[in-house]
Amino acid sequence: MKPIRIALLGCVTVGGGVVKLLRRNAQDYARKLGRPLELAAIADRSLKPDRSLGITRGLITRDSAALVGRPDIDIVVELFGGLEPARSLILKALEAGKDVVTGNKALLAEHGEEIFRGAARRGLAVGFEASVGGGVPIIRTLRQALAGDRQRAVYGIVNGTCNSILTTMTGQGVEFKAALADAQKSGIAEPDPTLDIEGHDAAHKLCLLVSLAFGVLLKPERVYTEGITRVTQSDIAYARELGYAIKLLAIAKEDGGAIEARVHPTMIAAGHLLSGVGGAFNAIYIHGEALGSTMYWGLGAGQMPTATAVMADVLEIARDRIIGASARSHALGLPVEHVRRAHVKPMDDVVCEYYLRFMVRDKPGVLGAIASILGRNGISIASVIQKDRGAEKTVPIIMRTHDTPERNLKRALGQIRRLTVVDANPGFIRIEESL
Ligand code: HSE
Image (cartoon, rainbow, N blue to C red):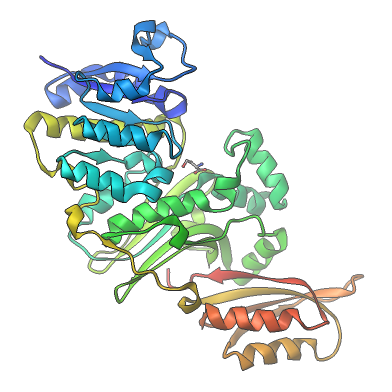
């Protein structure tokens, strides 16, 4: 029986997992499909033959451009990552009539429109289950299982590095730098962790979640993005005192046709399901109009969890190829010509409760001066904590506000910064009460 033939671009971590699954589960896959899957070639410059995985010299090529056009290939699995050459190779593969599977969230967030349109024009598939949540099947869930509902809000813990760092800071009482070093030592954080700790990886993933949840296209530059580098140990301790945990959340909401899309450290109720998501785990919490809330939890990265997501796409696409299904082109769950560009709500109009942290001189009238600036800007205070002075000249004042538009908060903080009795930059963290 003619096999479905796969070309693999990139065979490092996840690619290695894909090869292992293809070997280990070959009989299962053949039974599920009624035809075998065959690894036809691997493009990877530094790959060495490995007999235990059946990687022979003949299977390895350096010429990925030639490989994606080869007539004997059915499905191209792109695991190079990065924008180029991944983008050009995927477009070339589509031109040559291949279905594509990728885990490349940065590429799809930046160039998804071009790629999805290219696939739709030719009735081909782009599978991207591995791009968000690693092994957590969230893409398929949004596209298929939740398709009968209208989604209202998506809250994701979608970056394992940040979640792991915040979990260590919370559990061990250490500052950000020490927790990052710990995560790097254990291989969770990259040697250059910028993309993760500055929130960009989560923003890329949020763009894809928004596309599936709301049927719109969103570019990463439209997502308000703030990482976790400014979260301090004292923020975590005060959060606990106020009944909250701090998580890096990727948040999207639909509000009268406008999309709110933001990634930032967020205080959420300590008893909420998302607060219990620890370490490198991911979770996506979705609020649907008819269904209410559901949560999807699991390992968001790593060789084998992510490889299972790649293989789920390969199997679905292979099955569709075998039966000649034409629905392969609805990568975002709707015909590409019905996908709109997102109308994004400006961050100034986003309404939240806020946690505020000021370091101030311990003098009469200081609390009053801060409170009166907040009041003049229409911001109502929900609670205040002020600690006793000890040996220091400055004391922390912690406030929680009621709901206020971000515009008012920014204006008030600008005025408070100019008070001579306020030291350093005030800290603030958004609180998500409506979760
Ligand atoms: N670097 C990501 C994380 C995994 O820390 O979750 C890949 O998207």
